[in-house]
Length: 266
Image (tube, rainbow, N blue to C red; front, side, top):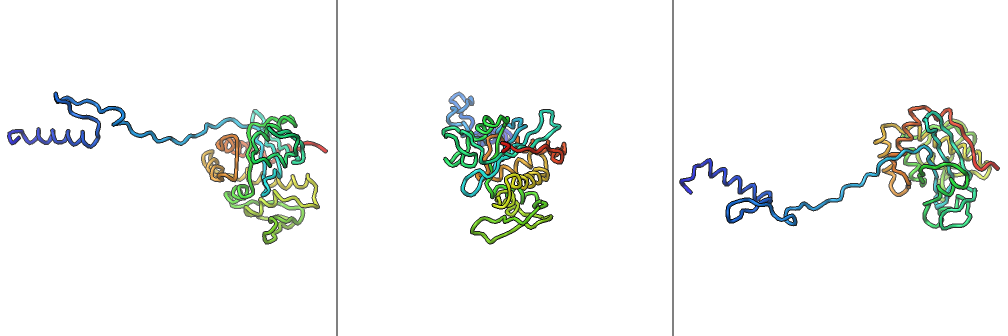
């Protein structure tokens, strides 16, 4: 080996080192390199994160779920196909529907069997409203959305209790108020026994509009906000689709001119 030039010795040792480090080749008896069997060299496959492709959503059902797992309010946000008009349809939770596997039940009780799957389809069929997707939010999730935009400003017509039973009583007084997440969610979700269903729905619309109008950022940023809600929010469409709808409504400034209605009309 002493007669081998230094450069050749360096080259040989380098090739051997590469072969040992990479584990890609072995040396046959005839000095030729061959690949190792696949089962030796294959890199373990790590499942990649599955990203749901977004889909176009024009009619989104927005439902709020109380601590008793009952549906408190239902609103369908309807964007026209040309993206130039917006209508808000408030649906009375007392409306009877037939969800999969259940008989006639009020919308409020439709999720008592532990799953809200198919409720939007039952509502769509009963009332004739096309629904592309739905999102169900518990109170903590709704509060989280409000907190993500730094609170909301509402104008209240009366004094309303916004805390749950067992909590220290908190109220929203008549007039203009800046509400943080928990109080805003309570304002939208707790109906006073002294107000009509229409009055309650009007309060809910205030909060929903304030949240959707003020969620800032691009589609990816708003998608992250909804995704971060975790198990206290459920949707049957990708959150990226919901984010895109929010951006389109905000960009077109459709909320101030939205047509608001209620179904069924009693």
